[in-house]
Image (cartoon, rainbow, N blue to C red; front, side):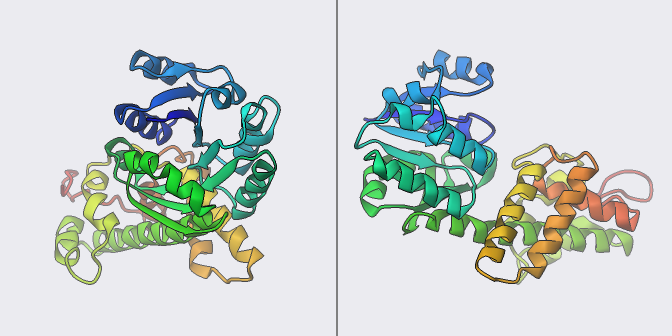
Length: 303
């Protein structure tokens, strides 16, 4: 069993950290909000007061943070991981950040004898709790092989994609498809509702044909009940899509569909709904079409 540090215990990180603890690893945790730290220490984790202190007590350090500047600060800033790291430590970042940032952090760590993996995840909070995440990994193959038992405690599909930054490129591709699918599903449901056809029956009709996808398999029942509680928050989807568009610009790749999806998510955030689930982008299209999906003429729902 390994000594593992985990920094960033939000919606995703808390579930992933718990699975490491359940797998028998010694877990050292740090987070800005202390409530989740106290919960995990009551379950057997060890609390640390800074990223540096986490690194001093760990052979592996995982992070799950909101954006590129946050990861860079925690990894390389004052009292950061690099200040407590020793040669041989492996750093694994499960955040979604710019590939260029991942490569910069990896290069800085390499000078200190630390191996770095960019290992973003997909599967939402349900996958984080269940240990069924897809984890796409970039970085030295040696580090990946050593970290694999930890990754297997947190995920079900674990793929080494390539060298540093490759995991974040894969996550960018993932977010293109996720956002596009969410927006397409929303358009389909709003069209059905506006045309006077039961969206629930439309989902039944198309979900086992060529339109079958994870979004149609999982999201409509909650949408019809107007349960928009987050599995993955919309403001994070908007942030990820900005990273995707910036990455496309770096490599001169046109992304017209992703640009539209990004604007819809930005509109959702502007409407004050950024903390809702990313499937709640349907609320933007509902507002434009003046309908509420799942609402029958008598005011009941079609669920």
